Image (tube, rainbow, N blue to C red; front, side, top):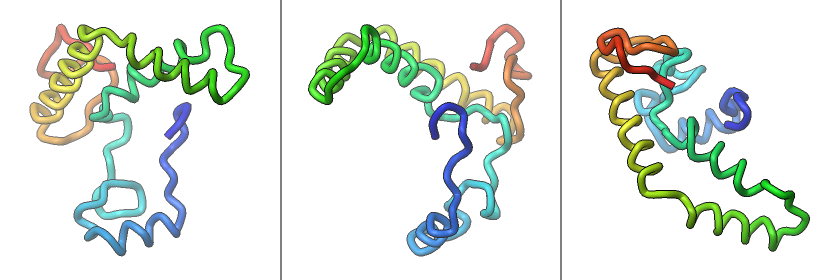
Length: 120
């Protein structure tokens, strides 16, 4: 998923999932278990890390594949431990909101049972 585009759900992908997983194990549109719209994604990387890396990798421009690879390596190595810790803490918080809501829809913004905490 890139730039807010919905996940790919072509027939070939649906068939591939159907061959390797039971329908009860696949969460997505066109399967019995749909991901609730606008619910928090459990992947912290979607909200922070990829954007952070992208902004650092492309800072100053990228003209060659070697430059791109070097920039990616440098950006990953420069991620601070505190950044990763906060990303994990945010994921734990968001999963607790999902538990608090018994898996139902959660609006962007405040977690209903944690009025002073914000969900990205």
